[in-house]
Image (cartoon, rainbow, N blue to C red; front, side, top):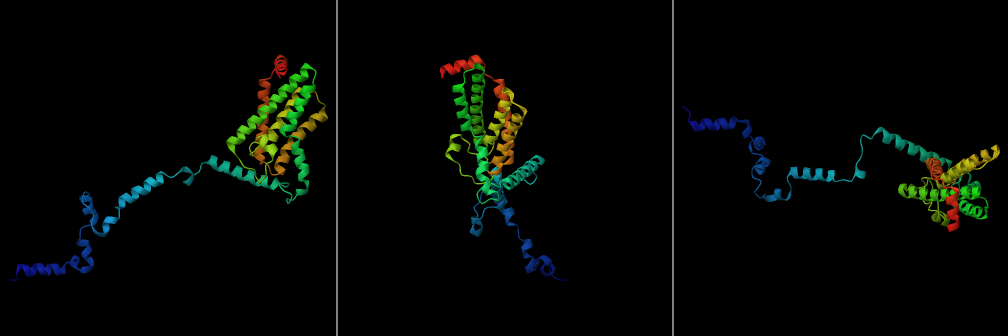
Length: 272
């Protein structure tokens, strides 16, 4: 009868898990031992590496602390897609219409003429001309209209400068700003100050002056011509000019709402 020890040895030899290539399956996992004794110090080469869970937690914390501009929106909204598409179309069309942006452009020879059209909508000629006409005016009705126009021009300069400072949109082309632009605080693209001014002035003159039909048509064409000239010289985008027209319309309505009477105008003129 074979001994019990020889039976156990034969059983161990027949066991597949006792082979050298399967010895690692019989050993306990190190992660379980480390989890069981978290207070013990790690020894050897494993002491310098953090546990896998700590690395994942750090990565999650860093990903949560990333700024919003570095995160990619995989599911943008329909409103965002539509807005970005319109802005891209606006930039592309504005660059194509900027045929007089420089002397090397396709219509560079007409740049001086187009800039001259834009000068007619500048704030300094209108402010200076209004003050001269107000000084030489001798009728109460004329002084009332001119003083309200002067206040409307000052309102336009302040409103456009404030919105431009808030939006800070650049021009479609690199345009060197002059001293007059800094004086009028016309430093950015949106909204177009010339467009808001000519629209407000044309609306003001059409409402408060008795003009013949040809003059009224020329006044409207002049307003749109000045706005188009700002796009052609590469100073503003298309949306900048249309935004200026909208702001000019709002300025006109505000001036009409806060219209100064003849007595108020006489008091202000006497103080001046």
